[in-house]
Image (cartoon, rainbow, N blue to C red; front, side):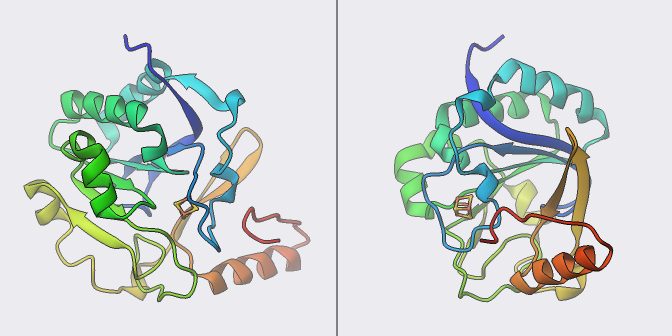
Length: 213
Ligand code: SF4
């Protein structure tokens, strides 16, 4: 077993809003990019308390793998923990079969290619670039229209054909509970959050969103 560890924010299965099919989701903790308007501010801290052996993460993923269509890795900024990311992807390369992996990064593609070319070789689909709060928000699987989808394998080129077109009808959120907290997974527009916030308040539910001051 690998001795590599990572700072982990959360894991979930099934995730249906970040890539095709029913997916295993892994969110890394820690991001050094700090985009204005980021909806994942709860993942920014590189908190020591979130450190976990990669082998423990893989054990959970092994349990989900038979029912899963693919793997999504987000954060936080996964490439800020490039060694752990590379090891996780190496496991998926060995065990994932025909499934594909989608990774989100706030770094621009040329930066990733220069610093982490070996890691990129293990990725099927990559969304790169920082979230820009004033950019358009027309994509169902990523947050702002300045971000770019890179289809790095033939499998991804087939599976993700056409997703770069905006598709408002496909926009949705997964809601799940973990350790007494409720989480949303997906790509909401800014106004969607305000609507959800208003709806919850009408029901007498007090909600705190990590990106809302
Ligand atoms: S959008 Fe991604 S890269 Fe940007 S601050 Fe949030 S977690 Fe970091």
